[in-house]
Length: 267
Image 1 (cartoon, rainbow, N blue to C red):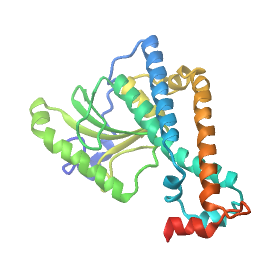
Image 2: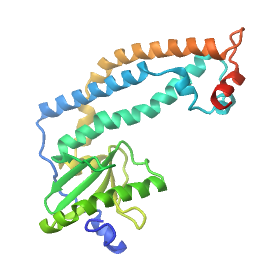
Image 3: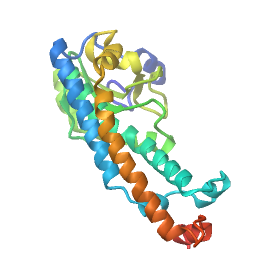
Image 4: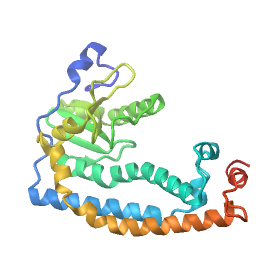
């Protein structure tokens, strides 16, 4: 959809895989990039810790399948607490990391600006091409209904910019950019935006084929420095969850009362 999302023929879509400029943004100095990575990791851990500190057992328990919890053979409070916290943080970490690390870095290195359009993160004027980029952590993010919504969001932005871009002779290039993975895919009849992932995504933003490796190198030992703070908050959450679980969802012998859990969740 590098011109009008609906006007590009299916045959031409593969040619529009798409007009990637060799370099969209200006290179940051090594020191500036190092500082940016550190700031983003700081924001990531601050959000992770805040997420844990405000977490309550019932808020998590009401969103989990009690039949599944029973079926996998959980027998002790410690097992259930560990499972609930792991499942919650695995899901929330992906979102938090995208918002505090991936998106800010992509914005900073792209030379573009933050989009005000719903569902779109970056807009980058790259010569004869105007790129609208939705940034995601990984490539396996959309089902069919989400793809349709993404189509609509790109289409809405295109209609808003169409006259202006036409006057400037620029093509509109909608992109789903993924921080990791290897998927690179042109638009299709059902998905009117292209997908670019991992090395290819970061290289398109920066012009640097090594940038995807630089990101992990520049983390250095900062995650280990932050981990202690996180582990302290994790221990508090474990204690809090265990206390509430035994007080409210265990019988007098200390055994988990699955009927009480089910009644709270589904009764």
